[in-house]
Image (cartoon, helix red, strand yellow):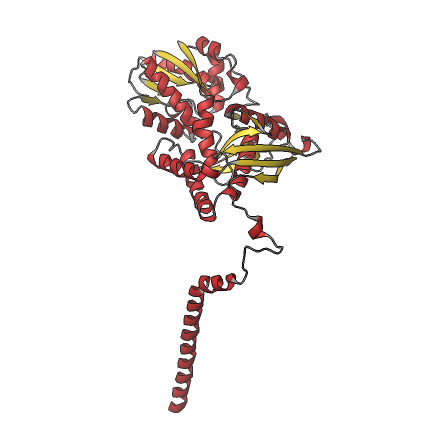
Length: 423
């Protein structure tokens, strides 16, 4: 425990188990003013009663930072345009929110003249890195306090004990003590029975944004999503803002069991962890965006961008949001999105998505060239010369192998003849 003193500490406050306990703990150990800050990234009902609870448990002030729009346009949509998917599965629901929250914390810390920022992340997780990378990039002069790395509490069970001992109200019980993270983009579930990969998730108990495939309608549904320069702008022809668009798609996707993921991923700190993620609207958007890129981007740009997408996903996952490399990659991605405009219609059925249609004014698909019927734009005879040149290096390689093999066989024969003469 540090002996450093502070005048004001800004706490990233969610009202969950960890941060509920932390307000009391900070007051007891630093004897200073605690300012609770909650960033609204779409938690909806989880925001209810937070101010009252924060003030009752020791905070001197409470801020609700309205950052939903920034979350969508500064983090979600750039990541969507990049096609960034961590380890080919995770749509970065938690990772995309953390830098936006970090910026809100820094802005209020500067406004309040605070000395430090505190977060409730454990020493095992990714979020400690994401928060602190953001804070250090935006305000390196501020100290960072991470109680889970210094206090005597070693488990969520002990944190509940601390809360009960100090009469701190909680919304959870020991039996429902999943570690959750909810925002506009997704909902994650970790802990309890999910820590053993042999256990099937209790979907009927834990799902909140989606239904299971068994509960989904027996009839398929159609939804069309329109994009302008890679950004989704309309559903079924109706233009809307990004926040409303994602919420609407969450409802549609959730009704049809879209976007439920059970994943074991590699955390930044080195261990593997298991989580169940719900990302109904995001799954629809990623799939639709991918289909539109396939019809509007040329082969070389599309394939190069696909190789870049994994590195971009790693940058976001690893908390490297405010870095020169990410800014440079964003510039490249924005260039690729200039023609990614059009509409994709999807058919949804019990957790599955299939493409119904794709249209774009910038489509590179030419039926005249691709048709199996008669055409007057493509000379099939040209293919012979193309193949001759395309395979030239292979021909030269094969001829070399034939020559060297012939030489080896000739040498064997010569060696056999010489041996016979000696005999």
